[in-house]
Length: 317
Image (cartoon, rainbow, N blue to C red):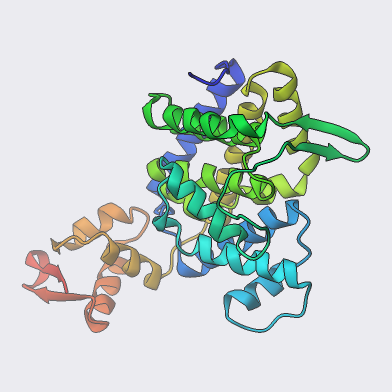
């Protein structure tokens, strides 16, 4: 059964905006960010997603843990970060369309933090905000078949990934399948669904925007609960994604260094190419800069050169 939601004008507008920005990301070679930017964004993702759940560690402390350094902090907070690091460093191990993979991810994310990590809850739960009950989750007996239906939608629906990822995120939060870790699992799984179609989402820390104004996140969840569909949450999450990609483009609105150009071109695995081929990828550089780049690439052992002048051919080593 398809989860209920509507495709509204704001949703269509956001999908168009996100699609245009993803095109710009690919055109500007940002779909394979530098190792430094990958690391920075991974730290932001882990920090923000866990901060939403009350984790007190700073980005500096998370960086230290990522570098296998000792950190002084609450034992639970440190373990949450160490578990998250293992997950986000091995995202390719998880299949976003597989329920067993989903349970395995929860087990790895929550191991040592709760009993029965990786297993659906066996008791009724409600979400409390302040002194009020915000949400009563479905009876625990219903969780297995509700999650099965949700994964069927994910696998079989021909809806676009941008929508499906938001729907899954909301519906999973509504079902609240685990005693703890539901929020971080919802955000993790949305990332994995989007990565299938758009690799840039592996390095896009949209959780940072959520953590900066958590009330909007919870408000979108509550509005969708009240409406009985995920439309408001889809609008909220697409807006978060749109802003995140814009910030990525703004951050990277700079000239690539010689080293970054060479590393990127080598990653394309073009067996043979000419200077013109190289300039077709980096359209904003001069022929003299391209020549210097390729000479450096030969010196570094990335390429080998044969022929002279206009007949020069480069081969990837």
